[in-house]
Amino acid sequence: MKIDPDNKADLSAQIAEAIREEIMAGRLIVDERLPSEAELADHFAVSRPTVREALKRLAAQSLIRTARGAFGGAFVNRLNYPEAYGQHITTSTLLLSMNRVSFDVACEARYALERACTPLAAARRTPDTLATMRAEIHRQGQPGLTDESFCASDVTFHRALVDSADNPVLSYQLAGAVEAMQPLMNMITFTARSREAIVGFHTRIADALERHEADVAQAALSELEAYTLTLGRDVMAARARPRQPA
Amino acid sequence: MKIDPDNKADLSAQIAEAIREEIMAGRLIVDERLPSEAELADHFAVSRPTVREALKRLAAQSLIRTARGAFGGAFVNRLNYPEAYGQHITTSTLLLSMNRVSFDVACEARYALERACTPLAAARRTPDTLATMRAEIHRQGQPGLTDESFCASDVTFHRALVDSADNPVLSYQLAGAVEAMQPLMNMITFTARSREAIVGFHTRIADALERHEADVAQAALSELEAYTLTLGRDVMAARARPRQPA
DNA sequence: TTACATTTAAATGTCTGACAATTTAAACGC
DNA sequence: GCGTTTAAATTGTCAGACATTTAAATGTAA
Image (cartoon, rainbow over all chains, first blue to last red; front, side, top):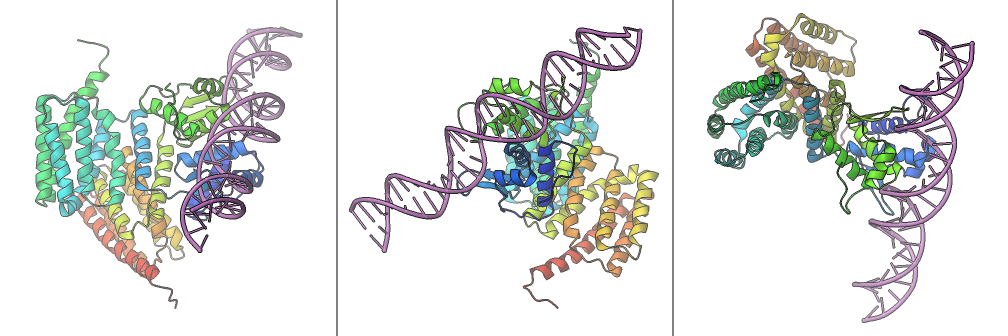
């Protein structure tokens, strides 16, 4: 393990960075046990609380996991898809919500990425993913549905579309784009008419995938993008307008 | 701030999660100051080291930043693009390297996503991004270039292609897919002939973008994908073969 | 011999208290 | 009025201790 040179930032940050580099470079492999906290403290010439802060930093990134008990300790963690999904979604959501990313830009990115999945999805869609999409379409047509539930169902539908491509790396990358849009979508009021329109687009997409027609699905996605954009722009325009309530 | 119920996981993890939810829900806004460590310790009825471990977890995710001194403390951090890029690339790279993701799957995802950028890139490419691509193409033709440098140049070229779309959200999402492939690409030995072929594809892509011809660029990308796949498959087949050196 | 209960050791989780380093605001002196 | 010093608040770090958990080692009885 490398050492900390002279002086710069927090010791715990330096130590975390040193261990992180060992993992990224493959010098610490999956499931390998790190030295105990006491040994690390001795090695880096710091106290145990400082080492613990460093380990907590790594644990927050799912780089290590810890176990108590006799043969416990800190182990290099195998990053699995659920953990990676969670991290990616958190980061993407905050990036969008904190940086005044316009609805247009986020929408454009999301639909461009979804169109990228469509050819694969049309080729590989399974009865299972189709059933999920059909179920969500049905749910979206229910009268009493709140706007929030409608949005959640929309996300589920689009994730099923992405998952139809049957490429876990693609699903992982897309999860951020799809989920991060939800807070922006939640600001929209979905009228009965707009819901009907969206359900129509969704039905066209599902039908096209079922028939393995990638280009039809892509066209429907593009129309849905344009329609979503108009809905979003109305909301953003209303929010940008100076305080002028009903 | 919420409280921790009775019993479950580590206290520092529970506290970090409670604060994280406050930030994600927007109840703690950007640049807002959190209570001091002593106050948090009092509020959650734990010791200060425990609070500190929780704060370090949040700092590792760039959710907060800390400052020393009289009016210092922990502040909700505005997640910026460089930080988000770094997190996303770290997670993506580890996800691929630790889960035996096949070269085929990663390659398919990457090129599908890049093709998604191509229409926008063809429409919006600037002299600046074109110049970057030309420069990298030139570099890739140099004779003495190591395989590693060739790979790094390849990544730079493809990121310039993605950045041509002029959509920061798209660039952010793509960064993970492009960068995470690099360790896999680094395993490939690039012969003079294969470099020549790749430079040819890159040139076709740059030319097409310059002429705003999205479909030509997409076709070249697809051919490059197929070619990269053959290169990668040779390497993977050689690695899968039982120990049988020259 | 086998099955079960007990002990033990090693490690993380947590607490208490203290001091060092840093930064800003206020007090002070000229 | 302006530069300097002081004070206060806060995070960073350390030391030592105890609590809790876990699995192996040991002991005991059927």
